[in-house]
Amino acid sequence: MSLLSPGDAFPALTLEQSGGGFFTIPDLFGGAFGVVLINRGSWCPYCNAQLRAFQRATDKLAEVGAKVVSFSVDDETTTAGMVVENGLTFPVGYSADAKEISSATGAFVDSEAGFLQSTGFVLDPSGRVVISVYSSGPIGRLVPDDVVGLIRYMRDHA
Image 1 (cartoon, rainbow, N blue to C red):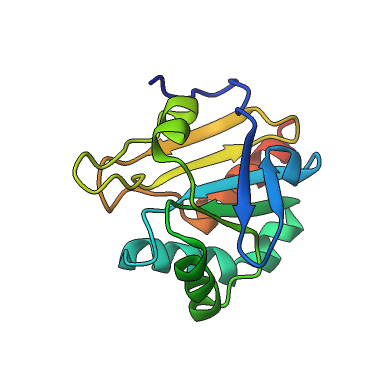
Image 2 (cartoon, rainbow, N blue to C red):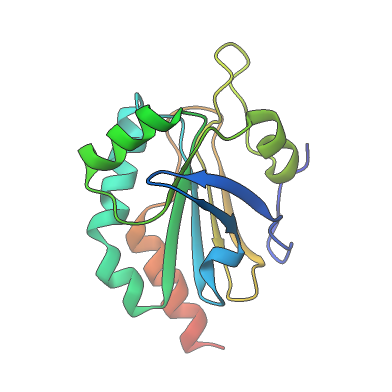
């Protein structure tokens, strides 16, 4: 496992999408800034709060040209319920293979339950990592205002 650092190309990850179909990160972002949120699961109150915060910030993120995606190891039914409960409109993937994702991104895996720990990435329009935020537990994660501010700064100083 190696952590992704600024400038690294984000690995291509294909996941099943709640509601049907598949998506591939970073292709999903189509040349826009991307925010990748790996969440611990629908049972995690911190993850639900983060996902709701990013949903509330949809307009601000769109203003800076950023798109959001999230995924976890949860199954399809559990993920669909979480999407509805939190009113999420961005793509949410399910049934991620924890070991595969960890190997590709460096995300930590809970050794007892096997879920992925909260991990976040901001990607530039070319699919390269701008920032990575790794957590080994429930707290320590990206917040929408920081992401919007970072992208504004990058655009103003390009």
